[in-house]
Length: 344
Image (cartoon, rainbow, N blue to C red; front, side, top):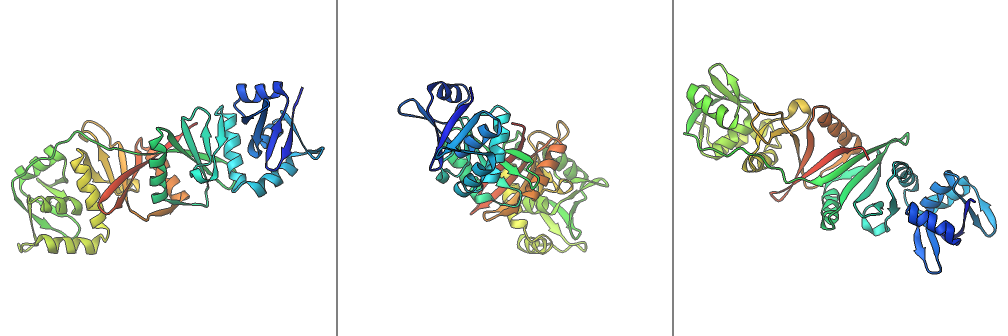
């Protein structure tokens, strides 16, 4: 026998004990009420109605799918994308339930293992709000999923988390050495010094018998007191002038350097991530032992982005067997926020 329910305000009440037991105990739909009744929200009602498992009445008149959808669209903010995600996850076997509006997420899983936030592809990702949401969810030891609905109704899922990124490479002390600035790279000509830099911490890339350093590597080594940078005609360049010259070439160098130094302190080998569309690629182990595990992109505290850009970054990282991590900087404090592709 088909289940029946009655629409009261924005809830659907199921009264028959047998129906209550089947819906709640077996499939975790609804919220039990006194008197062995069950209260369904509108998303659950529409899902069950669309699946042919319930008939819903209001003032003794039966509601069809269209009428109930119109009611729900007026009662539930962003109903259309929430329903698509709800239906998709339910069909995949996840017993998700609608959260209260002020929680910051759309759904929670019945066993409280994860929470789900829902977005349209036209929404804007706010990295600060994302960081805050991750931290709130983490307090309760739950995972956070993002479901992004595109204009055709297809859904992309990400698991979003804070990453305590770490590697195994120790920082070394190098003898002070000279190097020459050639516009947007710095060249070390001494053979032994070049060998030392490359073998111990994989700085630079071979250039003849020497080594070419990226600007951020040169700035980092200058701050450490290991390098004396000169012009091609032998004039010494002060650290302050070097930073100014590099800043003119790369205006976001200060933000990048904050993350570069932090990653080095965490034991990672850090190289450019340009060909992967990110600022850095980071290795937890030596590059001759493994591929880079992470692509790290540096953003400021107020960073916002269209979802298409995030989707592109995650897809590219996944295609080269890496994880995309956004390094969000707020007053020199860095949060590493990972977006991982998810197949629920």
